[in-house]
Image (tube, rainbow, N blue to C red; front, side, top):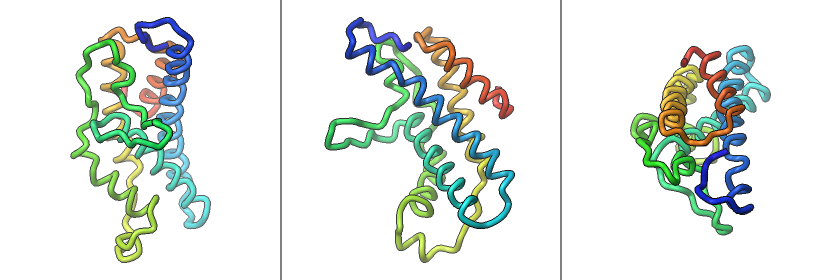
Length: 171
């Protein structure tokens, strides 16, 4: 559990699932990379795997970088690395957005928007390995800072995230 500095139910509920959702995004990203490597045939399954992979990659990019929060009408916002360090000075961001902007743009143009650029551009290849390597490095830095700053982070999810990194040769 992240230490919020407060002990009321609202704070507990706010932080209760952060580690779970962060782990889920990381786990899905790397599991989808494996599945994309197994599925060589063009078609609906490969397309669904690629689209899911791209969305999880974009979520991790937005989480680890200083790209601005997206504000929604209900005042929800995209979770950021800063949400884990509310009472601790941190060293983030954990990836430089300029280093992954090309990946994010590719996701936005080729996957999640029916854009003119998408229909006019020639189909390009995706390197799930390259994307997970870049994002994995940022995740590794984030987890090290969690440890170094002694942020109270759920030990189960800390172990599981580190296992994902280890299984993908990033630790």
